[in-house]
Image 1 (cartoon, helix red, strand yellow):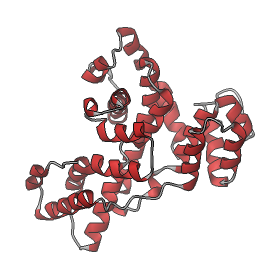
Image 2 (cartoon, helix red, strand yellow):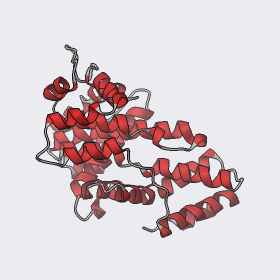
Image 3 (cartoon, rainbow, N blue to C red):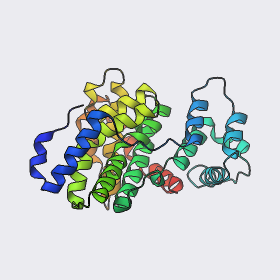
Length: 290
């Protein structure tokens, strides 16, 4: 994957040095990828096994008390159970389904605490909020456009996984070499390198092809070889998430007039349906934030 090296000239000498280091990591595939939490890996394996059942999922989650607590708290939130209180994982799985409990489990086990970049903790928290928001919007876009709803959550959650990894690499390199770069330059480097880093992360985590292609091509979905529609859904969801998280009062009209929504072949009624999903996404976001 080629990085736009021409933009390095606009960086400070320290920024250029860090950029060269990041480019070398990509070229040599020596990116330090955080370990995928074991429970997340096992939850994903179960979700992809057609012979798995609710009892196996409940047993797996119950093996991690902290995870089980998070899952039950989220399952009992207004986003999922507004009128009743569930007392067991088996009850939660029966009522909400394995797919939803799998999503909740992944969110509870994959979070900003996976990364060690003290200089950028606030930014990494923003990245995760956007990733979760994209996952939730991804389900709504997929449902409205009749695409793969379950895959869209995971693809949305991981679409920007390269961003915190870039920031961790910057943090480690600058500290080890007693360098200092501005937050503005760190953000430029994050934007330049996050796709290349993200591709390596999801490959090393052995994520399904549909996830790998969404990470690699969500910005330029037409370039995807096998998962154009999925990358398209994540592109649309990321735009909706950005509007919701960065505007004091969301105005989706301009976003929904974007090219990607036309490429999804959404009709006017579909667009109006999506506008009404903001509260659903907000409620889900509030419930899943740990």
